[in-house]
Image (cartoon, rainbow, N blue to C red; front, top):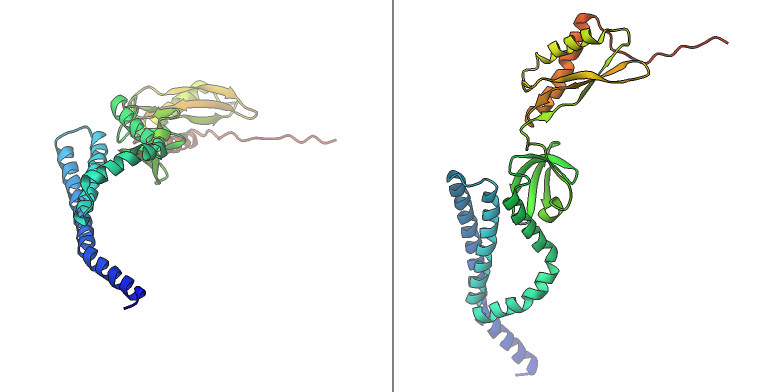
Length: 268
């Protein structure tokens, strides 16, 4: 028997010896990950029903999922025949290098912990973070998930989310809706102010706070009036659009024309 045949025989014997272990390890991984997903799902439902802070639920689910999956991988390694102690030592030895390579990821984890402790924003809040405006859906171990107002799911690393100015639009319980209405110069402001106030009274989604209705500035062809009703973060756009609609309707009923630029042409 030549050398190549001996090598192939030895290789085949090795494959036969390791195949059951490798197949068993793969089965452990598949079943283990499935069990982990089931555990985290049940745990999440239980935490939600227990009244635990909704900010903590996705964070803890994500953290537990990572830890349990690491245990599954260690178990699969043991099934293959790798000594767990040696494997742990290998992980520890590689830990420094991995930690240096994942320093950014670890900073995202630390930022997530800080968000949960100091609560600059919470799940459900309307926020403006790094130019993304939307509602916070989840605060995960490494990321904050935001549903933007234009219906996009934005996954932002926690370290980036906390590295700049964070505007929590829900924190004060109400938002000011900034509107501008043009009034012709020949109209009486007090009269127009009453008409606008009456129009805003028909906007049922606005808050009962007294709206601001004052002259903001004088333009080339009209008087610009600042109209400032209040709304919640959920009713903001309803108040915005319905206010303009009711003001336009009231102006039409009162015979007030919306101002528009005019230009006189002189004959030479």
